[in-house]
Image (cartoon, rainbow, N blue to C red):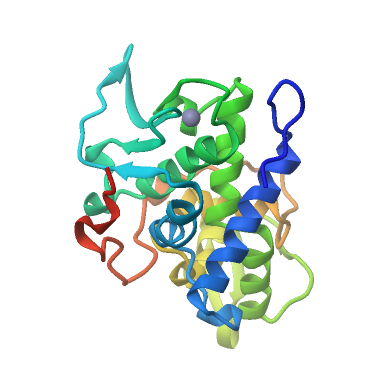
Length: 255
Ligand SMILES: [Zn+2]
């Protein structure tokens, strides 16, 4: 399954392919037949696909400390085959960073074993300006395993019964969604968020920023203005599903 060149490197396209293979296996494992049944839950993906296939353990009980001034959120140790997630953002905290950080570390585990003895990932490498290829690829993997393009597009177009992009033409009054409700929209972030909100039930616990970014990226919403996507006024996070994300107690801790 691992596709490597002589330098043991893997291409971005191969990283996306690995993520989509994991997603397909997850859907198969869960026995889901129609898109409406699917919920992308990173812990369930870990349990049903990643652990059985790659035998990577997961521990979310430790304080991972800092790297300089940056809090370490996740670690992957190649030889020990273990993923560590800082306990401040673990599944019981309901912090949406748990979802993305676990997806990111699984990305290192699946795509980068053997390239480095360990990966120590901070808020900076996971969420900010990433200059390193491995960190970029781990984020790419996380994004594609948590919010697969095709799945988000399918759910968005199905919900809004559209097959072309919904256009953002600047602040103003829009007819949105079921029954063409009239809503006063004050920014691009507000517009995308109103459109994204009904879809959050398909995802276990992700940040609204991630889902909005994805919706813009895959082109189901088209920004016809010069405005950038800025989320400051909308708060930090949401819990996308009423399902309790930590449902298996300590069963997930295999170390
Ligand atoms: Zn990393």
